[in-house]
Length: 133
Image (tube, rainbow, N blue to C red; front, side):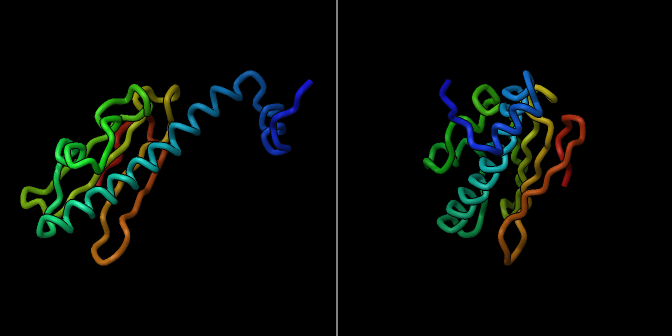
């Protein structure tokens, strides 16, 4: 027998039993969704720095090489991402919602820029609905 799990992981496997890998998949998707939103915030900052403080849509951020195509599909991420721009392009917010609630994730996320500070990502389990600003 080869033991490849650390003590904490071994406890989780014993606690979760046959549901361990299912729970791990959800946890991984959720962590990656939060990271993608953080990446969106950085991409928007880079774009705004080069474009007189205006933000842009996913297509332009992908075209500029700031974001991967994964942001457009839930296939690899398990999450659906949405970006809402203010008409003047001076503000935005983004959401990440589980593609299939309970299967690909449980937490919904909201990215909101904070003037003069770092953007804030908040989350809640709201039954698979997008968080609102």
